[in-house]
Length: 342
View 1 (cartoon, helix red, strand yellow):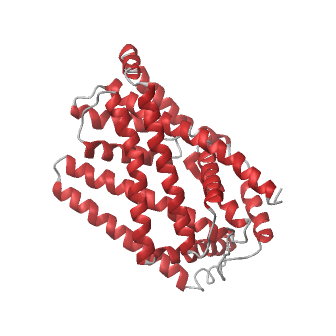
View 2 (cartoon, helix red, strand yellow):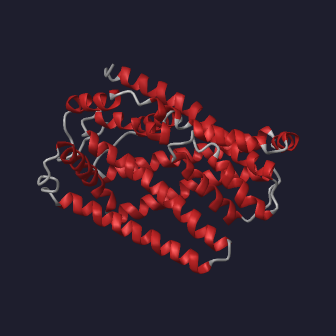
View 3 (cartoon, one colour):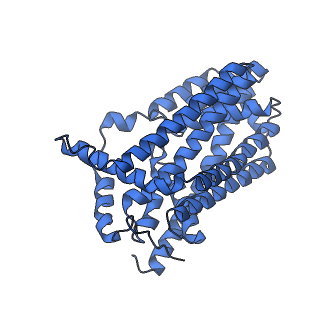
């Protein structure tokens, strides 16, 4: 079932295609920016140099192929549930995207996320919406909202659960209230952007006007997803999807014979997941290993086992995103050919 963009959001895909092409073709990044992610690899090399290599190899050897496959399966479930969540968000915008197209587009975005800093490549999935006549800004809004849901969940799990596990009940309560306040402020800003047509007109700077216009378009695209029923459903699917993410971690922890409180593993993995957004690392490599070491050593887990858990979890997710993502890339290419888009 093809998408029927709602009025006010839909425009000709031909009009948006040049904008996307220009955005993607921009100037080549400076050398220092291209080398910046390598800092994470340097940090990882330093961490590995301080470990007992024999103990590290032994830790990896504890994990069976069946455990790796089980972890991969849980992560694949996590991705599929996020595809379903994205479809539901699009329906709130008035766009009905078939599951096969949504799945192919989402998985292709997962592939490109692995080869871009900060995982911005995942937004390539908007091409499936733009080619159906949706404005680029409105199409991007569902993807940005999708990511914000994930970031909010891992922040909550990391900060609230982390403080709770450490016995800091007041800190956990304060973290929860701070996140709720942050969410409320964010919602207020979004609504302010959508109501104000004159914001930026008093400023002579053309670039500022353009940036504010883009933010306003994003905010307008998100408005339908802020309806209480839609937001509650999206949060529910986010919790269910991330259960698969954490289940993949639990399977590996069992394989490594790491026995720590489940809540601590969730808090630890949540903070580690946020490192993928850092511009100085590739998928958080280096930074996430330090987090695993520092958090788990208080539970008597060796540095080698902690690093093995971090690397294996990242390996499963990366392999899953690349393998399934490549399938999505080729699937989307075939869909475009069959539709006469190429």
